[in-house]
Length: 152
Image 1 (cartoon, rainbow, N blue to C red):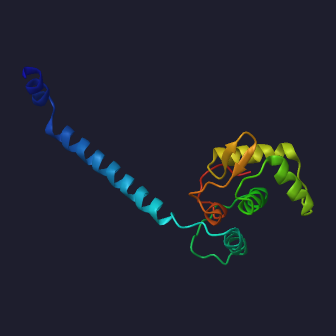
Image 2 (tube, helix red, strand yellow):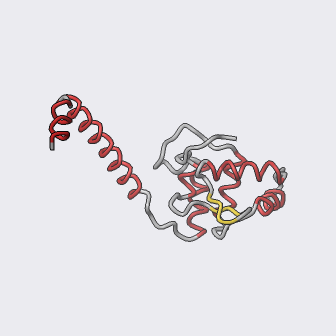
Image 3 (spheres, rainbow, N blue to C red):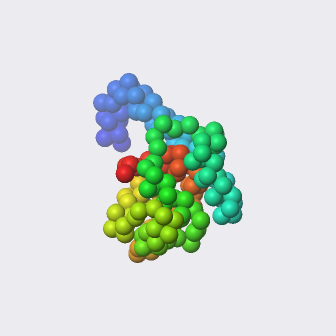
């Protein structure tokens, strides 16, 4: 009991008050994150609905989110393709689809970009060499840049 009394006597009250304020600040931050997460937990809808949301965002008709940071055209094209294939796609699949749509694409740069997008939280690696959109993040929010990460 003496050690507890000594510890309490040695601890200035202002240090305790400061630590309480720090913990209350951290608690408020966590509550804010929880509220934001709950707001983004909407049903993803079918592929057609998600694709339309992506097109609206790209055209600038989605005014619900404002963000100055934009994704590169390559990342936008990858997100659009993977949104249409919720089971996921490999970099080779994405490369073939982009080439079929008339865009220039090479597998190695696409693979590197997709790996970086997974690291940034914009894609989820579901198995070796296969990626899909994170289920908790709607494609439209990715296109608006709300998932942080490096740009290409």
